[in-house]
Image (cartoon, rainbow, N blue to C red; front, side):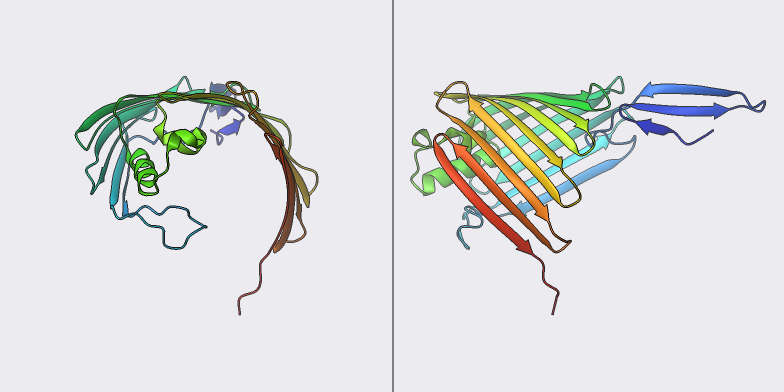
Length: 285
């Protein structure tokens, strides 16, 4: 036998018998970090205090403690089971379970459900996702999440507490800044690497709240012009609000392993911005 050869979304195994005859076996192959090998356990436990306005204020901490735990188990080489729990000292209890399944070697389907109780309010959440590779250069992923009744998780609790503590009315703000408060989220993304070092992304996001919604279409283009120069361009448009759109372009120059510069220009709903940054790493003293 020779070592398997993986190219794009296909694995090739060449076997040579005692007479010298070779047989070639090709099968679809798709790798995802959502799938664990059979018998593998993975878990994590986290506890801490939420910090808000990171990078703006040094000590903007909540006074509640949050905790979460998650576990995954490789039931087989194609099926991974998962479970999770979240809690907070102000009354959140959240339990969830789910799975990820390799589909014919060309993609992965995952599903998750969760139930919560927070301040005498109960709710549920369900998520279904699919990711895969259409060809060597084209990949995709899509997901749909819906919450029922008064569902809460740590993200939703932290945003509600922040809005309340700072006396902010989310209805007067940009809802996209508070996606954890959404009732439904649908995402669909296609990535196409059409040339070595170049890639294009096309994404659609539909976010629904109890009294508002967004339908955003966005596209990104990035590439490396040579070993020192690269670029990134993006654009988006909200089809619920035709006045909400934006474009962005950045040019990057890596002068050395310690020095790089970025020049960018953006236009967002009529507002034009220009920015220039230069990063340098100094030798430790």
